[in-house]
Image (cartoon, rainbow, N blue to C red; front, top):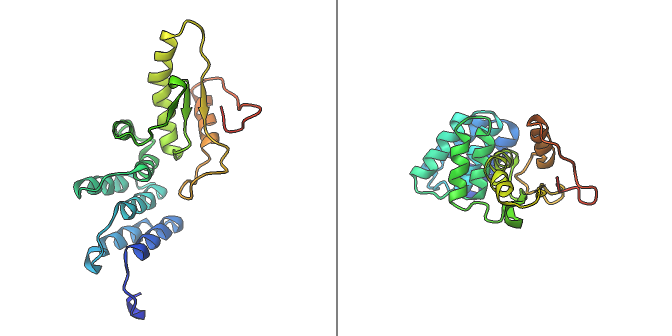
Length: 198
């Protein structure tokens, strides 16, 4: 851009960082983030989330976590996208549960529990945050519901059919949930009349 006398702005930086994620260029994404202040552009939550996503997509979870920590240190407030990006990056690491609980405390997904906890709604989740939500729900909410119920309650997970997936979501949440439940030995099936309900 400078060669063409164009001045980069936040939008052009964010678009470039997002393109780095799609191209697997996490190091270039970090370089662009580092160049923003010198260009007079303050990195926003969107910029940080794009950098976290680029690192996460390249399995550089430590770098993604470092960016997330810098985001917090700089006074930026993580939003739903920031949390889903960092949870995607770290979902297989032990520390992911602490980050997930932090997101819960900040009410990142206010409508996640429906039917007094009998339904887990994963519409606003990415693959990583959905896996953590399911594990949390199975460990804490389902046993609590079963202990208080006079009859055997039924439970469901709303994954959505994938048709309204947000642009940043690249994972098939329903398929990921089905694999997780199978690995846990939990019998489940997709609802015959609603493909977005397990």
